[in-house]
Image (cartoon, helix red, strand yellow):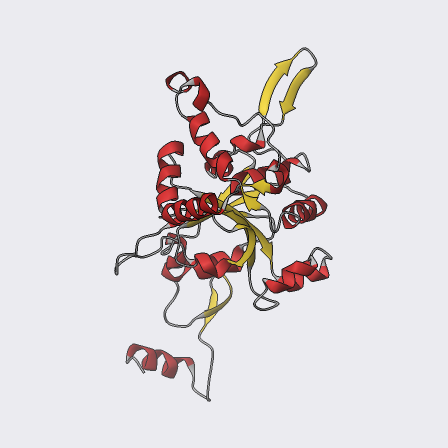
Length: 291
């Protein structure tokens, strides 16, 4: 590409990825601490972005999810499992840092700390019943993509494909099914992840047909995947960690516990424990007096 072309591409990319400053009262809908405590390697994380390109993706897909990434675990876990490539050490700020791999417009396929998205609205999509062996293959498949360029052309092809086909001039119609030199070293976030799971024959949103030989699953073109597909897929469990969860109310604390301190061997056989040489009558009296 000529220097002028590179400059134009860089300027356009910066314009697309520009994200306005958040309002002072902005609060994430996700409890990041709980998410970090529960997340597992192989989980897909969906992000609701706020950049210009995120708004375009929301408009096209009619979904709040604009970006997807794969949780890898931490560098220590990946090293112990023999999955960490040499290049990964450059991305690990500490052996225990939570790491994700993603394809980012303007940056390509990179590994970053999960903490980068601490203040974002996140959702976990967990592949149901994925074996440990296949999970490791999925991780290896995505780690092999480190350094790949972001496939900007595919992003716009996808936009054209999702628009009403009859309204688009023939010369603008999608080229998603055509081969272009260099495509093998370019990808976008959702396509990269769909390809990784399909490499172990794990379904995301397969095309299903009832043939003469019975029910058949067909792999969907990975270039057609968007972040919302992992949310919509029946093969991924959706896990949410809201900023204020109703399960954090700890309803067990509201159970009608006896407040006098009786201890029971069984129903009808309850006594107050004797402490410091006091008998039961003295203890009852202190309880009544609020001592």
